[in-house]
Every structure is written in C-alpha cells, then in structure tokens.
Image (cartoon, rainbow, N blue to C red; front, side, top):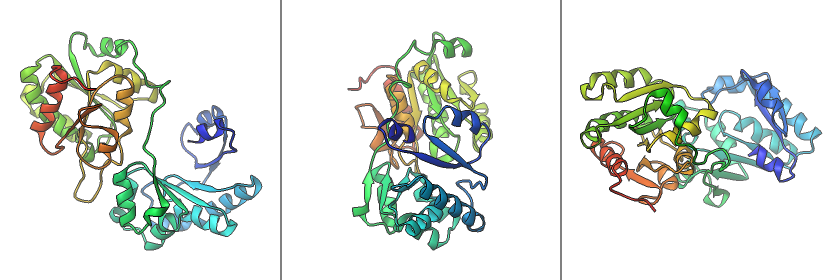
Length: 332
C-alpha cells in the first residue's frame, strides 16, 4: 500500500517496529520508513500494549506533526490501534484502519479490554475490510456499516504470472512426470492442510502419479508430518519443503497443477479473512480448491477460478482436487 501511494505522488511515512533484516528492507523502499524500538507483536496482551503506549504515542505525535500528516492509517488494528487512534484525536486528524481477516476475532480470543476495541475500531473514521466476511465480523464488534468499505485484496501481476512451469522446482524435487498439488502458507489449523492430506488417499486412486507438496511452517507442522507418515498410501506422495521465501512462491505456483487450501472457520471464530494465496495461484494460471468458509468466497468464484468445497469433508476436498487434476472440469 505504501509503495502504491508513493507511486501516485502521495507523501508516505511508515512507522514500524524493529525486525531482523529491516535495514536491508528499508534501504530498498522509495518511501520513508522509521523504526520504533518498542516492539509489539500481533499477540501482545493488554499490559504490554499499555507499557508501550507512551513511547508509541510520543513517536506518532512527533512524526505526524513534523511531516504535517493529513491522516493516520493503522494496519492491523491490534495492538497499535489504541495508540494511533489516541494520537489522531489529539492532532485532530482522520484515523483510518485496515482489517485483513483474523484480527476481527482476535480480541475475543485474547480477551482484550473493551477500550482497545473501542479506540482501535469503533472510533475509526473509516474501516477498510478485505472481504464481506470480515465486514460482518467488524459490524458485530459495534462498527457502523456506513463507516466500513470492503476492498478485496489483489496481487502484483509483474511478480505473479505464468512462467516456465516451475522447472527449477520440479527438477529440485524430482517431480517431472508427476502431477502436483500445492498447499502453501502457515501451517495452522484453519488452513485445512490435514484435510488435503486425507483427501490424497482418494485422489491417488484416480491419479496415482500425484504428489502433494506442503510449503510453509507453523504449529501444526509436526502433527501433519505424523499424519502423512501414518497413512500408508501416502508414502512417497507427500513432500514437506519447509518455509518459502517470497521470491520462491511464484516458482511453486507455476510448478503445481492445482493449489489447495480448504480453509475453515474454527470454534473460536478463527477463519481465513480472504485468502490472497488463491489470487497468487490464479495469476500464475493455476486453478484452486478453497474451503467454503470465511472470506474465501470473495476470492474464489465457484466454477470460475476454482472450486469451493466443504472444508471439513475430506471426500469433498478429494472430489474437487480430482476434478481439476484429471481435467474433468474446465474453469472459465
């Protein structure tokens, strides 16, 4: 967003916490990036937010005054929405906030104080949501619909586009002559990777040359590896390739035949807010299998750029994968 705003001629200053490798990243940015020593993660709790509040307020206030800011934009709303909102009110500036997805349910999960939700969301002049699902969750949190705008995600067509069929990936993984199902992203329960592995048992009956490549890492990684090892029919047909750098994502998309992420909504409300990975795969010319859940239906039009399936039903996931792998269905 900062890059595009800067490209349009707007003055942009980004405030962010220090992270490993941030100096190299910042050096390549055409816009101004300022780093704050007081770091807060997306899972910071009330006491951490309060402890860092004076420092963030001081920095936001100073930078906004010196740079003569026209507005303060916060992304995501937690944990810094409270500081941004307070600074905007003190400076009489519009306060805007973006909600990508799971942030809409995070307060309920973490038990944040009402004051955080009040200042971060309810007092915003405008709330930008990535999907209709996210919008509905934000409305449930007390934000008026008239202050919400739904702006779906997109991808850079210069970065994600059809290539050489992912030749380097296929050569490295020994997949030439095989059909490839790709699941890529953080290995967490809501992504539904476990259903993809179970679906592979059925997929292999009709397409025995298929290999499922699991790219990414996360808290469910060990359980998924045990699941793959425990299913005798999957031996040799599942590859875990670990974390993937941004530059490697496009090669994986180009190498696969179908991208699968049957995302689902969990009992605690955690769900996929949109699923930009579906659009990244589409931009590389690949069909997708998505869960009929959360914001995925905003990214995937059933029968057009992919198939929507029941994310809890491994057989439904298998049916979608088989239809696309065996070319029994041509998408528009």
